[in-house]
Image (cartoon, rainbow, N blue to C red; front, side):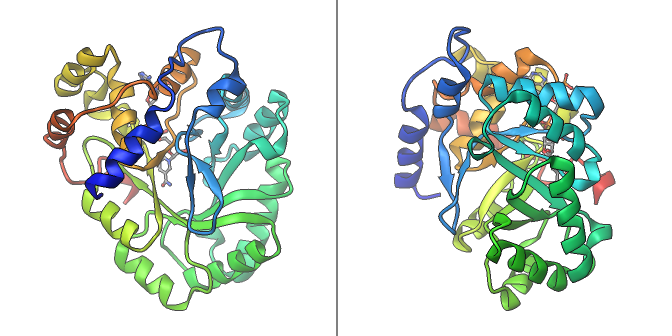
Length: 300
Ligand SMILES: NC(=O)c1ccc[n+]([C@@H]2O[C@H](COP(=O)([O-])OP(=O)(O)OC[C@H]3O[C@@H](n4cnc5c(N)ncnc54)[C@H](OP(=O)(O)O)[C@@H]3O)[C@@H](O)[C@H]2O)c1
């Protein structure tokens, strides 16, 4: 990213200097201080949200309701997580107005194709208990991408989806999609965390005007991220945890992200990343952690 843009982003992210840890701060106030990113179709998406992979049943319901009550507004789920119903119940429990939320769900591999995608989408709506989705993503670049994309474009034009995008697409796969797409993907949700930093991919996505979104921003807890000494040394400077440094490092790059936890203290901690700024030296230290490969080979 150009230096001028980085400076602008930092000012944006630091405004105002405020501690989210203050227990008296209301969820509405916290939500207001999560910056919004404008996607390529003008839709605004929070830069920080809540992931729900592996949260099921009452844990998913309670975690989603709790996260919303603390100030999260972006909720990320997927058909294949098998939790859309519980996530939907959590949303209803929270009592929040639908328009306040930004809900992402994803089309799974087995539902690829024009007809199947339409059916799968309707089922997701039903399970989530909503009548539109803010961001609908092709979960993985498999099967009939062209037919699926056409179905998603139609659903978008009907107003049932506010933004359409992809996940886990390589730049070459995006190029192919762009060769026939009427509507450009707004987002590519990909693996990004301190051990797989993806700067080059980020640059390519920015050139394509497609917003990067980081999945597993905390590397799913792998590689002892929470006790990593390089991250801990940076955290000591700002009195922040390793999780907060990793998340700040991602949003400071202009990348949207969606950490997941069922622990209320962690939910709050992960929101409390807007009152400090990593400097160039910190960014250089973070760069030393890059292993430049996926940390989830089992999902390849
Ligand atoms: N598109 C895709 O293909 C794809 C793939 C993977 C993930 N995703 C999305 O990205 C989201 C996030 O990824 P993820 O769920 O794999 O993992 P993650 O958010 O990188 O890490 C989750 C782990 O970090 C722990 N944690 C969270 N906050 C913490 C904190 N402040 N201090 C210490 N530990 C903390 C959680 O602990 P507890 O368990 O104790 O709460 C959990 O074990 C998913 O939930 C999903 O929505 C998408």
